[in-house]
Length: 151
Image 1 (cartoon, one colour):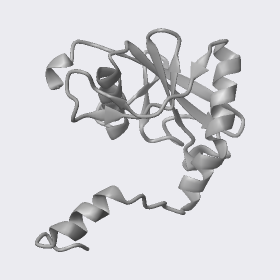
Image 2 (cartoon, helix red, strand yellow):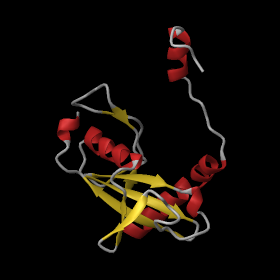
Image 3 (tube, rainbow, N blue to C red):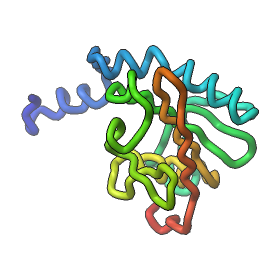
C-alpha cells in the first residue's frame, strides 16, 4: 500500500499498467474476440474498434468501449468465468436477473453504471452487453435514458 503522504509514488501507481493474471482475467482475454465475432455474425452488424473516447461535455471523463456498432450503438463483452461451462442464467451470472421473461442487467450492479457512463460519455444511444459462454452468448441491450444530469 502507498502512504497518502508520498504523492509521487501515489501518482506513479495511477499511471502504471498492472496486469492481473488470474483465471477469470485470462478467460476473458482469451475469449473476448470469439465473443465479439459471434455477436457480429449473429446480429449481422459491423463493429468498429476504437481506443479511448473523451467525453465532449466533461473532458475529465473518458471511456473505452469494446466496440462501436452502427451509428448509435456500443458493445461491451463479458466472458464470465462462472458460466464458462454452463448456460448464461441468473444462477451462473449473478449480475443478471430475469425481467418480463428476459435477461436483464441488475440495476444495482457496477456493470450498469459502467455501461450507462460509457453511453453518456460517447453520446450514443444504446449498448449491447454480450455475455459469452462456451456454448454461445446472450445479448442484453441497455438503452440511454435522460441521465445527462449525471455529468
